[in-house]
Image (tube, rainbow, N blue to C red):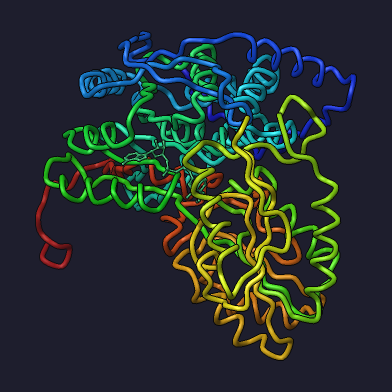
Length: 541
Ligand code: NAD
């Protein structure tokens, strides 16, 4: 019996380790990189805590060395998806009634395990499988994942403590019930932390999940499953289903027990899941919760008063860190003509300094893009720009797939604010820049607001604070996460809850209580202490 009201105060963010040469973390990570690089593992399906091997397999390879196999994984068929629904609903019986402090303890144990024993394991898996350098892996797989665990426990405690007032002679309270069914978590390749959070935020609130991991992040995602098991998560609460997204999505959305989707990925995929849920609406117990963070066409808007050096650094890091494969990555920039020469010069210097290559060589700032499909897609935009009369490549532009999927950091300059790469999401290291006449700030702000259907992240640079404020206000619907004099990437849990609207998602802000509240269905209970026994109003007596 637990009758204590446990406090979970706001935690501190997990410190980012330095990985200096000779540091204990660097030694442990390098040893783990060697181990994982030299050991081909088998990744099973996990349903109800049991490993399942269908024999229908695929390969996990290094993006920066596409012939090097890291793992063989087993794919689900419709049969395994239905088994997972059954296992999840079985687990729901106990997990949905488990004392929330026990759920919190399990999640906080996950944070401790990841901060210690699992840190090198999951960082190395993310580096090899998703082609991130040490720093990019550390801020994602270790720090952000740990922050999600710890902050969500704090946010959950705030939600549970939101209670109505009592009336005269009665007691009122809200029970935050988990959804009546299972949540389908469909996760992207680009952030291990998002893959973790899409399952764990509903699970913390007492839900059960079917997890469809991205095929190109299976290695780190499989080790997350191992961590969850070690932290004491009961069997069947999360069921791990590698395989075809369409098959899993269609089978889940056809189930009576489908209660919600927690999705991050492209807008097209989320729309197809939403449509499938809409088409099956009559089958469900309740209206499903559809939560999705999707694509972006994130911008930097530069005012003539901006510091060119700050703009160049922000544009370079905002567009090219992790090869531009962050949903928040800057991919279009509007800059006054008077500043563009300086900024371009500085960006060229930076481009000549950075190295591109394998993640095991820690001098490399740029690694590979995720897979062949992505490589082809990004290359096609670069080729399009090369052939266009209203655009030119001013930095980079070379693509090389001989060993890995390598694309140079590329800047396209255009005189056409509606040039294809100013409007469409590319999801790679490509920044398109539109230099505008210095006296056309207002018209250009309108262009920036109306050019793309997305509304994820954006940044404004300027030293004239009043002018910056006007731009920020005029662009208030253009981004769900907006930055002043900073790059539009790098949101930190608890500091900048993350998400966008328009075609960028439902804006339920991962890393905040808005998200967690989507995974509960409140029941308000009124208890009358002495029940009335006479129907007459007072004045009738
Ligand atoms: P994706 O849409 O290709 O894949 C996302 C997930 O959906 C994967 O697990 C994939 O296997 C699965 N999937 C694919 N087709 C499916 C279908 N028909 N039914 C069900 N599931 C299906 O996206 P991605 O390439 O993994 O990630 C890149 C995209 O994610 C970009 O558009 C990026 O902007 C977006 N993203 C957004 C955010 C955000 O917070 N807004 C964060 C990260 C990534």
